Amino acid sequence: DHHTLPTDRPPVVALLNSRCFPSGHPLSTLSGVAVAFKLIEALYTVMPAEQPLEELLDLVAIGLIADLVELTGDCRYLAQRGIEQLQKQRQSGTPKRPGIARLLELCRKNGDRPTDISYGIGPRINAISRIYGDARFAVELLTSQAVDRCQQLAEDTELANTRRKALQKEVVQQVRSQLNHLDLSTTSVIVLSDPQWSVGVLGLVAGQIAQEYDRPTILLSTDVTESATTQSEASVRLARGSARSIHSVDLYQLVNQQSHLLHRFGGHPYAAGLSLPIENISLFSEAINRQHRLQELVSGIPRVSFQADLAVTVAELGQELFRQLKGLEPYGMGNPTPKLLLRNVWFNKVHHQNIYDWKKRKVRYIKTEFEVWDESASVGFPGIWWEHYKDEIPTQRSDIIAELDFNPFQKRYEIRLVAIRPSSTAALPLSTLAWQNWLLDYRGQGIEPEGNVFAIARCPSSWDELYAWLRHALQNEQKLAIAYSNPSPNPAIECWQQLVGIAKYLSRTRELASQTQLQEKLDIGDRVLHLGFKALRSLGLTITIPNTNTVQMQWQFREPSMDGLSKTLEVQSFLEAVQEEYFRRRYFYHVPLSTIQTVLEQNYGLLV
Image (cartoon, rainbow, N blue to C red):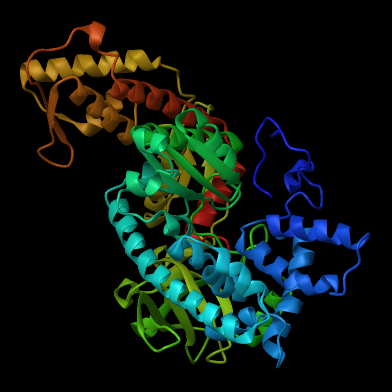
């Protein structure tokens, strides 16, 4: 296996797991299939077989790329060699693996690209267990040499994959519907649940949502009937699901730190499966979000959602760029597909359509096709956006992140759209793009900034606050000056007592207060203030907000005594949030100016 090992070694005679090696060892990231291959390689030294060892490498490549392990070191080498073997299955008139050859034919792939596995073979093999609940015939499909039998198995696999796509689309839509009611500005890790979700597709959906929203994602099914494998598990009402990570976030360690809330858990840094009592989901979500936010602050590496490896123009897209990027393959975890940034583009010939299976039947799975244009080219370049409708393509100029690909079925180069935003180049004054020393540091100096500057006097607690202030400065063609003082620590309980005092006063006097006034008086941010409102409501206070800023408060029955004012979970959540916000402000006071400048430039595309 290759999943992260538990602290205590299981009571077995022999343990074959690549994670037994120390970090940095060339074999430490091998997947389970590569561990099996290394065992066979060792057996060949004492028990030679007729089949050449390298003929097994196509199976190794499929497992390495589909199993979300880092494609570096030996993993990268084995994947490269395996893809060489894989493409022989399609090129040969009598392939040694007719099941794989037929799968490549059905998904219209040649087998010479890592994406032929990640977007073609891998999802189809995984669909067998996701839909049928039994992966045994997948082994026969991969290893049998009976052509007719493999033909039937491959077609059954394609049918399972078609059903998987329809089911995945439904769950994705339901997840997005829940996300519409979630405050993403305060959400570091997405944790959602639903009794109708099929456990079999939650890993795929979690991966899609994680990439789309640039956050680690954990999706859970609370269907006790489906989730329970034993009568005892059913009695504790367990939720089961899958987790997927992004970037360099070690998902295993992140989830494992909440093990006291879990029933079972296993996986590796990029993907995991878990189960937990349904009543623990809310606590788990709050705890893992708090832990991840603290890790981001301690590491000093903020999340930037719109990232690219290379800025290009439409004129540069095509065969030559594709050839250069292909030299970096195979792509996968640890060596992701290069993300291309195209600025100030517009779209033409936009239309969406359902896709069709190999029998020309419509599949409930949408794609949008388009041409992308910019000032560099006299013709547009084709592209595709999976699982999105044409109405989601903006009519104004935009910046996009895309991946360059070759479509062997249509024999054309095209881009896969990954992310999109309004054009930063068009939105910002051109003069600001050429400024030098646009960010000034007055922290702790006790000096008032002079000249055409926009000064930040209050220490921020999030990057979003800095982004908003930068936008304001640029729109007014001002430089940005960070001139806030070292935040003074106030015990969280004092902040809570002060909020309760204000609530009592407003309740007695029936006066109104603005949320801005409350934030300034308590020296807390918007998110923490609303957690304070939630805590007050748990104690019987009615809070009405007649407009977007005004607040009115009234105790429903009688004001609670101070003895009971800090005993609810909501109050504890408020106290923890106050402590966390102070920790964040301390970070923003001490973070180097170079870090602030880099993050802000990346977010607004000021770097060429």
